[in-house]
Image 1 (cartoon, rainbow, N blue to C red):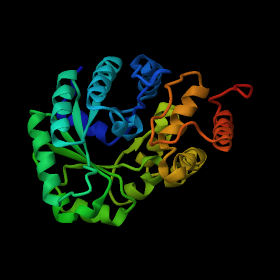
Image 2 (image 1 turned 90 degrees about the vertical axis):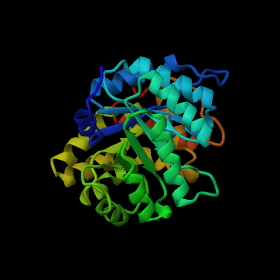
Image 3 (image 1 turned 180 degrees about the vertical axis):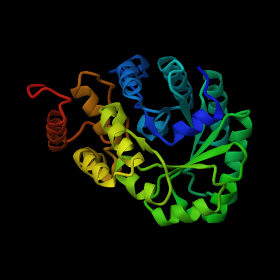
Image 4 (image 1 turned 120 degrees about the vertical axis):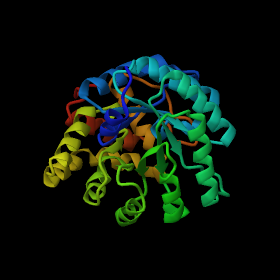
Length: 307
């Protein structure tokens, strides 16, 4: 199934679910393990799924693995929802991954902000331009984790014709509001810091949010989104408070347990997606594992007697 631009734009204002990347016991890709995760997310109504995002351990994958991961995700999603493909690393790797993502049938490209220690604002703009050209018309979503490149550069990024959306992943709502004023009003600004920051970003005009929770409990993410879309901030905050212990665990060890908590939860639920690669934390500490177990039981996702 293909999605026209208007349908895709509407879905961008929903939940962008970031899929985990499964490994087997020998630390090799085992994409078949992702099937129950995808099926649960699609059945719950998650609007968009993303392969090769940060919850997918993008920077722990080789470029070849990332190419295989996007092809596998496309097969599992099977056109039921738009699939966004994460793009990044060196410009050569990024262009190779762009071509592979296009061949896999991705609906759009999400360009990770280059983590290179020597990044010029105009260099970032050129990087995205080259990816957009290689995408041959695929919509481009900018994943902005650091607004230090400045509002002028952000405005230049937003002016690239293929760019349709910005995932704002820096905890600065007023800076987001200032950036939005410099861009085409038609652009969709998505909260890139998951459910917990969504109300603050909604308040200044962003819509939708990214989510790693959808791997485990997509129905709860959908309930939060529905409350925000209804303007019921009190309900949204109450729902967020329920899942905040999960996000608090993910934020431990300098965010090094971000993916670890997701994968540990899936393992407890009988959907083991393997270990987290270094430099992520694995396994969870005994205290972290016990807290996660209690949360899953409280939410009704795990039977009390589960190991």
